[in-house]
Structures are given as C-alpha cells and as structure tokens.
Length: 290
Image (cartoon, rainbow, N blue to C red; front, side, top):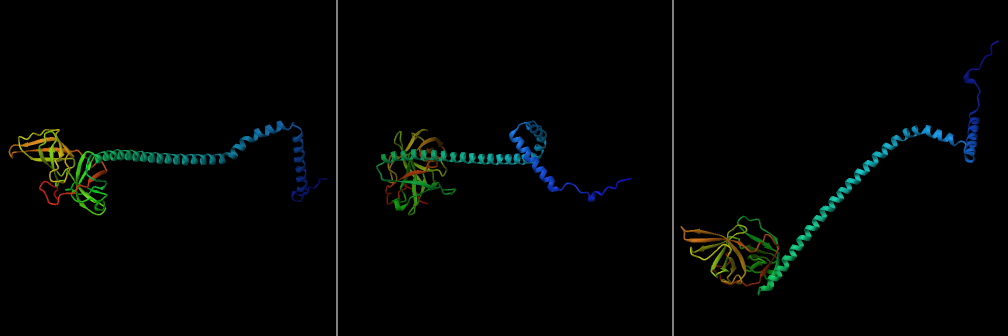
C-alpha cells in the first residue's frame, strides 16, 4: 500500500523565525567561545587565507581608482611645482637684472657728481625720457625743462664729456641735439697742440667730423678734442671726442678727420645740463637751429 506524499507547495517546514533564532543563538555561542577559548584560531586562519583572494578581487576596482587618483594628483602637484619654480626663476632673474641696472646707474650718478664738482657752472641733473624716432635727427628728450631753469642752447654733458645742446624746451621737458646731429657744431681744440678746429655732427650715431683742415695740419689718429670756449655756448676744456681716422682729399685741398664722441648717450640715462647762459647774438660757430 503506497503512501501519498503532500505536494512540495503545501509542505510544512521549520518557520523562518525559528531558523533566525537558532542562527542568532549560534552566533552568540561562537562569540562567547571565541572570547574565552582559542581553539577556533586555526579555523579563523584557514578561513582568512581562503577568503584573501576573493577580498583582493573585490578590492581591485577600488585600488585601480585610488592609483589613478594618486597619479593624477602627483602629476598636478608636479606641474604646479614646475610652474612655481619657473616663476621664481624668472622673478629672481628680473630682480638680479634690476639690481645690476641700479648698480650701474648709481656708479654713473657718482661719476656725474664728480664731473659736477669739477665744472664751475651750475647744473641740473636730467634723465632721458625717450629717443625720438626721426631718421635725420640725433636727439633725445629729457625729463626737465624751463621750470628747472633750462634754456635753448645750454650744453648737456656726461661723465665722458659733451653730449649735445638743448634745442627746444617745454615747462617739464627738453629736447637735446646730440653732437652727432648734422645741425650741430662745436668750436674745439686739439688737446695735444692747441690747434683750433670745428667739430661737426655727421648725422650718424657714434661719429663726428673735423672738416676743412689744411693739408699740412698737424693732426694724428688718437688726438683728443676738447671744447675751446669760443662762441660762449660751451665752457672751455670739456671733452668732445678722439680722432679715429684721417681722410686727405688732395684734389680739393683739405683734410677731414673722423672722430668718436667721448660721451655715449646711448649707454646712459642720466646727464647734466649746464645752466650756462648762451650768448644773445648768433655766432657762426654756435649751435645751428633747424
């Protein structure tokens, strides 16, 4: 006689609440046993060893993300440090350049003070504002004008000698024509033998000329030119330049000497304007106005 079994759908088993109770009770018992006895330690070690690969696999995405974040942070910090180092290097270079420039200017100003002490004429220290962009003029614009007592015709000097002559003035600025300007001329002497000559601007930077010399004139390369004081525009004894070459034109019967100015306005920013009152009447050897 066969026994009929009940369908699985209607089987009665242990209630879930009972299972939960026994599992909780088992956990409590295991906790108490683990806290008081150590015989479960080998089981824990084996379980930990078996679970470790699965833990690493589970943590692998997190480790990848952390590695990428750390690398990105390192690259960002490195780039920031490079930018900071480059900025510091540029700033240090700028400060060093500025310090060297200030040291050079201080040396020049001290030399100008020495020049001022040797010239028995009141003077005003000036600074170059800018150089006009004019193809046919050799001139500079200074930062002081008539408000400081500067007048047209007054000489401008540097530690090397004559730089030029005031051409125009405004209340706070002045334009000075350089000795190289082709509209200027300076009565001069050859320092070696006292021969009187006229020095003209050539219209080219770094070059002046001594014109209309006789063929038998006693002039040599290396002779120094100083102002003669004739005409009243320049005090006597100021350095003008040095003869660098001599050109003889026997067909026309004269000698021309090329000289290099002793003052170099393109290398300095500070000069002295001698408050030397120009003569009231024009002289043929004086400054030529445009």
